[in-house]
Length: 273
Image (tube, rainbow, N blue to C red):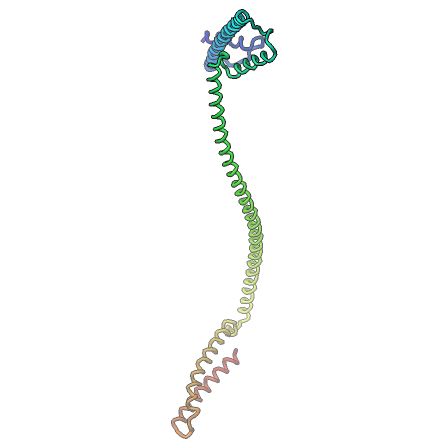
């Protein structure tokens, strides 16, 4: 534990340098976490140092190769950067720039061709991906147009629904007000009817003159009128007979008495009504 704390403190001191190390709670968990961070940082620093050393070594190798090539050109061919014409210098600069862009080791044709092939393949893949992306974009635009149309339609439906709900709400509120009015009116009429019935009871009113009794009498009168019609039709054949036969006279008298009784009963009911 003490060794881990010492390593952590050493690492924090190297990280913050001249700045003071922030205070932290020293416990097993924090020390373990900081210790793992310290080990990871040291490993990354070691890898970075190795990579830097490798890059430096390659740079020194490239410089040595460049110096060697300059010596070859200068001693073997008699060419130097100062002796080249401006177009030749421009071509050489462009060749070097292309080599650096392509990431080749040298400027030989055997290095340029694979690099160009790789760039061509990447270009073809990029164009293929671009065409695929254009198709997807076209499909997305089409779906977006359909979605916008659907959204507009849905918004119109929502607006109509809101207006319909507002109208229905107003109608419902009006119905509620009407229902409250009708309920209050019905309650008032019921109270008035109860008071009227109480007054009629207190005055010993005859139930035969009530509306229900009158309606019943009217129905009975209608029934009697219907009963008189067949009797009149029954008397019609006897109206054409001669009054001489005694039997016809008797029947006629009986029918007249029955008719008179029915007329009397009918008149009594009509007068009573």
